[in-house]
Every structure is written in C-alpha cells, then in structure tokens.
Image (cartoon, rainbow, N blue to C red; front, side):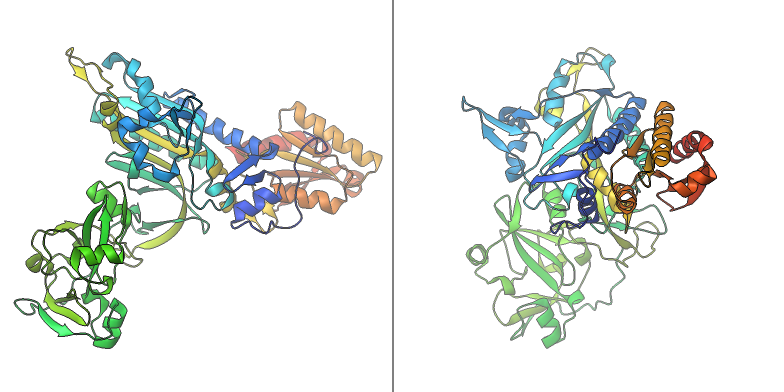
Length: 568
C-alpha cells in the first residue's frame, strides 16, 4: 500500500472529547471516526486490524471444531418473548415496528436465534455442535464512552455449544476457555479469567476475561498469592473475627439525636460503622424488600439480582418506604418488621450486640442480633469486597484491579432449548433436550484494549500479529537516489510477502517519522542519503526503539525474520 493512496487522516493534536488513551490514539492515528455517540466508522487502517483479529479468532475457533454461521441482526419480538428477555433487556434493546406493525428488535446477542436454528438437530448423534459467527450487535448504552471501549454498535464473535449432557457442556466450555486464552495471547492482550455473574444471560457458571486498564469500568478482585480472581459482582472474601459481646437479651432503645447516617452515628454517639446494621429498602420486581448489611459495607446490586433471580431492582423512594414501614429512609431498622421480604448479608451472621435503626427519628436499638431478632430473614452474600480483605482460598490480602472486559463465557444449561422447544432423539429413543453454552468476544473492544496496553507518548505500538502493516518504508528527502532505493525496497518486500506500507508522500521527514510512530507499525525502514552512501538502511523496531543499520541487499531477509519472530 502507498501512503498517497491510503486514507489515514492523522491528526496533530488530541481530540478534545477523547477520554481514554485508545480513544485518543485511534482517532489521532486515523483508524476510526465518530459518527455519533457510541457509533464509529472504522477507516482502512482500523479495518485491517479488525480483520487480523478476526482471522486469529476464526483460526482458533476452527481448531476446536466450530462452524461459522451468519444470522440476522434484526429479530422478531416473539422469539425473545418466549424466553422472557424481551422485557428483561429493557431500554438497552433497540426496538422498532416494520410497515406491517410487527415488533422487531436489533440483536444484542443471539442465544434465541441460534437456538431456533438448532431445532433442526434430530439426533444425539449430531452432538456436540459448536456454532459461531461475527455479527453486529446493538445495545442502547445510556452512557457510551471510551471510544471503542463502550459503544452502541459493535462486532461480536459469539459462539454457542450444544451438547447432550453436563459432561459434554464441561468439555465445550473448557475448549472455549482454552481457545480464548490462546486468542488473547496471540493478539497481545493480558487476559485474567475471573468468576463472574451470568446476569441476564442465565446459567450457573460464568467466566469473564479481563484486561487490566485504567480506562476500564470493571473492578476485579484478585489474589496475588493464588489463582483466585472474581468480578466484584461475584467476589467474596474472609473477614476477620469480631469482638462481639453477648449484649442484652433483647434490643434496647437509646436516644441518638442528630444521627441520620452511619457516619453521624459513629461521630456523635461513638458507634463504629462495623458494629452497625445498615437497613436499606429496595423494590425487587416491585416487591418491597429490606436489605441488611454491615454499616461499613456496600451493596452489590448484581448479587441481589442473582440471589432473587430478579429482573428489575431499584432503591425504594421515600414515599414507598413511608407507606410500607411508616418510617423515613434515615431511620430504618429490621427489628419488629413483619410481612416484608428481608435479606441479610452473610457478614452479619452470628453477630451480636449490634446497633440498628429503630424506625423512628432520634432513636436507635443496641444489642441487636439479626438471627435472634429478625425471624424469617434470608441470608445471602450481598456485600462488595474491599482491597486488603483475606482471600477465601489462601488467606492472602486481596487486591482490586481496574479492567476492561474482553470476553465472557457462560454455561447456559437448558434455559433456551427448553423455552424454545428444542429436543431430539436420545440413545434409547427417548426425547432429550440439549444443553447449551454461550461464548462472546467484542472485536472492536479488543482493538481498543490492545491500544490501552500497547502505546507510548509517540502513539500506538501494535503487536505484530494484528498490526495493519508489518513494515513501513520511509524515504527521507526527494533526491532521486533516495526515492529509487525506497521504491526498490518496497517492491522487494511486497514480492517477498511482507505486508508493507511505503510513505511516498511529498512531506517533511519529521512529518513522516511522526506519522510512522503514531500509527504504530512494528518495523520501519528509513532510507536517507547518509545511509545510502554506506549502502545501508536504518531498521527501527517500534516496540523497543532499537535501531540497526542493515545492508540494502539484506533488508528483505532481515525483515522477514523480524516479522516472523514478532508474530510467533
């Protein structure tokens, strides 16, 4: 490719609204352009990187026996209604009516549609099956941000496994996990597999692949001493022992004027937050629910959703609290409450002599034990894990890491095949319902995640396996001998199968060199009059900055070796 023919509109300055390194650099280097919030056009350089990543994904999927499909992006509402997800997806699903008034949705994911295709499987002998596609997905993100990190329209590699039994699903899941680990290693991404919530996907086993990045929106909990890692929506930890005293035989009222919050109760009345019970009111699928947590712990809403298999959860409003309990939000307590669903976090189990609200202004209760004083309470892990707490596996202090989710794999079970009436002949001529797995990976997000990791103050530093070109040839100056040497080198590299870009623009050397560093091609051949006088060209490795003079006659073999080594 010649730069004079390449549409790569590089920018000298950072875009004003770019909020992540990948966003800034992909725009500056001419890989992408924003059409509107959450929607991006990939320019030729971006398409080349996308294609290379997809080629790697495709090769690894084929290694595990997967077959490629291409399913529609526009889906009839009735299929999603059969699985209950037409309502579950809420405002994130783009919905429309066609000219006949039929309800349609733009696909956020394809579990329903692949399951519908699987209705043509007739016998257990056809299993296992692994099907995958690259398809555009649409999600009406409330706050798209970070360029390609969080968009409303993106390419996903999604695959689906169909097996006869749980053992078969275990094998398919393991195959995908290993394939994902190979893919991320090949494209140059650190990927930490973590335990995760299945969320609206359903199923009982879920693993996310998380790439450390300050631009990420997900926190994971990781043990530096063993292999424990989990998303904060799933993470748990060991808490230190307590110094609880038995306390009184029943809760006692005491005056707490001026204490509407846990911090005020601690500051004004000397009750530390770890000895408080914080009572919060929620609507869980429209059912009024009280949640009890330790005063210094935070609720993870996804844990609440998973515990109750809920669709919609939200904090209750002041009027709703007053109607249900006759109290204001700042004075809630669990003691004496009946007829209302109540969940307590496991950190409160076995605790005694705690302090809670009394349900009225200026009064609290001390000597509270949830187990004793709140009959009918349900126990669940609801709290957010904090850095420094002890690992459940080995006891070492846990750390929090900010990350970008780059892949997510689920064991779905039979949720979709049962709801969509998929069955086939079993080994004894009985009808069997296949069991499914679902495995997703965002392609454009992978591009952005690589840039988040692989860049410096000069621009992008692409891993060789996914770079838009392997080599760029830069002639410094317009002298005939420089131009001819650059052109000869370019032709020889292309003939040898090295993917090469020649900068044949009539630009100043400084502009050419800055653009080469900005777009991040792994190897640069720089040809100038001084080197030509010595019969050499300068070969610069972008990742390290290493520069070596190479005889002109050896350039092709030298760069073939560098490219092969870097891509291995």
